[in-house]
Length: 474
Image (cartoon, rainbow, N blue to C red; front, top):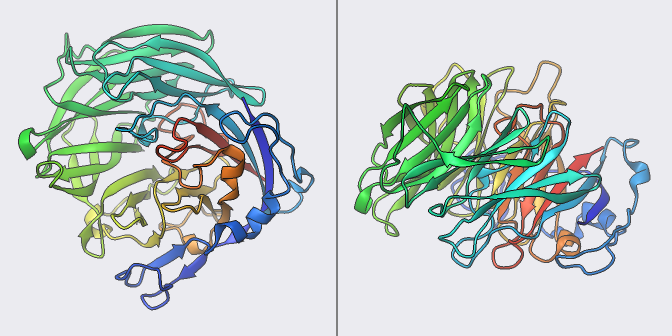
């Protein structure tokens, strides 16, 4: 396994604050939104120049060998300098021509156990319709190492959803042959697999035909929340299904018909209270592939049907939700969503107001594919976003004032770190346009979020078999 360290100076975002202030390459119709654009030439930014003194030795593809640090002596002494540690989590990430390795970034994150050990889960199978096994990777010393695996039941096709609770990794998947919701466990303290078995909900439970798009999250109670979608037949209305377990068995399932949508996929979760969820996902209306996409917020108290609100940009539906985070102090909901024209829209909703009054974004980032929130316990809120072209990865860090984060973050004033084209020279060609971003987040674990860190999967059909961890520190 390979580990690297770089030290880069800070960049401030370049901002257009009105409809006439955007550059020539800005899509029309941004209105009065603040729009943050990427640097015009990622290879020429000052962060890239500073990184160029750090040189990886050995093979620059999937086996990089050792590396040298080009300037860690300034780390911690200059508030405008960030160091970035990088380590490869795996080069065995499941990927195919039909399904890129970054499929389903909501399904997994970097997870922390009670001893501050870090874990990651990935799947394996010979083709897109066979997901044969779950693999557990552990961070040891300066590197990630395989720690164990266990087979999934034979009817699992899609990737599985995982969280870490009380030092046990729990994983759920849908077995489309046996019509079962399958649960697997793995003890991180002993590195022993606990096996996989069908979930019972008041007795044997059969998932309906066309069940797909599983997801899971850990609520503050704590409780395990697991959901999936029943896809509507021939473009007909689908339904959203969830179950929850406080430790004494699964409750429900609670089934809510989708309001005019065929399915609801790629769902990210956060919580507004111990038993109150706020999720966001990608909806689809019509017969595939001739239908239309949209992004929905999904709200419910445990045991109750879900309510849905569509998100928009310039009055038009947004293609897909990308992440959600709830401020634990104010209760403000922060959401990211992806557009059809490779923009990333940011929304903020105070806790005492409805989504219908905040369904248009307050900021828009251009040249973006994927975006995630990272909220370490130190108090910052960061947006990590990947380029849709070859701009690499950008991290924008909002430092809260003494009374906490504002309702809507001014990302124009955020600290900005750009991981641009030269990243590919160290991790392997393909990370200038990542296909997925995975974060350490409270919905994946019961421990505090201990670092401003994330993982990136490489570009589709170029490097999407690899996932790398990146950790920022001063």
